[in-house]
Amino acid sequence: MTLRPILIHPDPRLKTLAEPVPAITDEIRRLADDMLETMYDAPGIGLAAPQIGKLSRLLVMDATKEDEGAARPMVLVNPKVTWESESRSVYEEGCLSIPEQFADVERPAEVEVEWLGLDGKTHSERFDGLWATCVQHEIDHLDGWLFIDYLKPMKRQMITRKMIKLKRERARG
Ligand SMILES: [Zn+2]
Image (cartoon, rainbow, N blue to C red; front, top):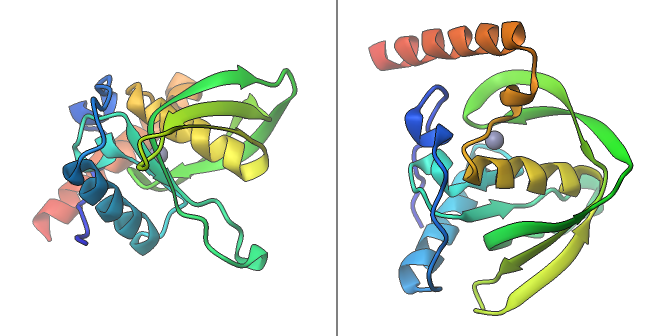
């Protein structure tokens, strides 16, 4: 397994619609392994392939809370939301591509998601709580959409300016 560098906003690859994965191959399995490793290392609870520059519809997540015990690494290929609840919830979201910036985002409180597993089978599950927020945030990435795109333009521009500055500082090393 290899840690992959995570792209930082703004980057055109984070604003691009990702392509469906045509088949589960060894390359896709390797990519998923690398993404899980990269996510846990960051640390984060979700990572979508475009965040490491791969424009494929693949995401990994593990929104298990520390006090809930065992980790539950999940790999979702070609995920899509098939149902969403009318009730909504607000979470303070962050993103590995927008480090140290957080903002409240309102989303459906529960969603049902269908995806292709690494076993080549179709899976379907209903998510709530942090899992629901996480899976919706990650699917947004596959559509070139970031959590800051839900915010008012002023706030979004302020965060973007901070990220440009951060990238400049990191480039200088
Ligand atoms: Zn994100």
